[in-house]
Amino acid sequence: EVQLVESGGGLVQPGGSLRLSCAASGFTFSEPWMIWVRQAPGKGLEWVTNINQDGSAKFYVDSVRGRFTISRDNDKNSLYLQMNSLRAEDTAVYYCARDGKPHAADSWGQGTLVTVSS
Amino acid sequence: QSALTQPASVSGSPGQSITISCTGTSSDVGGSNSVSWYQQYPGKGPKLIIYEVTNRPSGVPDRFSGSKSGNTASLTISGLQAEDEADYYCRSHTGSSAPYLFGSGTKVTVL
Image (cartoon, rainbow over all chains, first blue to last red; front, side, top):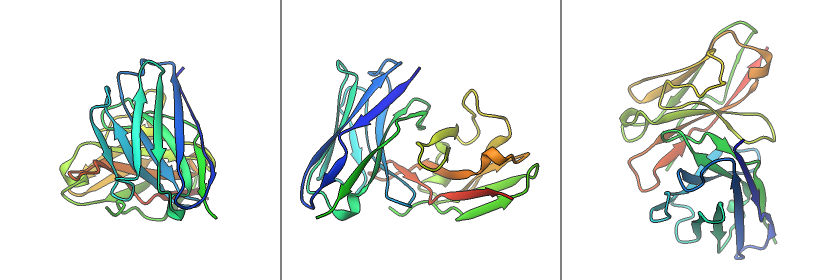
């Protein structure tokens, strides 16, 4: 069974940093692209970033480019999101997902809440 | 990068069919067959129900179907059931530096 478990969320002050982790199991982690998607409270889904199989290609939504960094460790079956210079508008549930179908996320984690507030 | 446009809400009675639209541009929906649809219940992570415009993952009922015409993709739910009450999102590949975009989301209510 495919499982994705996010961790690392919490309360952080504006301008602060946080590192999210996503532990994967039940599939060959090194095979698919992986993505992070976020959802602000009461709002819709927003695609944030993705990374290819060996980490050599990464793409970001404009609002986080230069502040967030996606990475992966295929030996540890883990996906990461380093978030710096956090803003109030980054407050959201962050989901880790596997792009296991062509250009589609077929497995999702339960999400981890990031709250940016003073 | 504005979200793809979906109706905020759609409703129907049990057994009826409803259609949710997802409108973009020739740079995303219109220029891509990489449109997918997701179902999300409150407090839960999304679930993939359609990929590559028309394909259903295994386990997804055939009541769910997808299509596309021009810059608009559509999700149709036939034989609406109470359990279909949820939020639905489309997602499309784009030609921009941020390669994917979600729709604004549609709340489906079963009357």
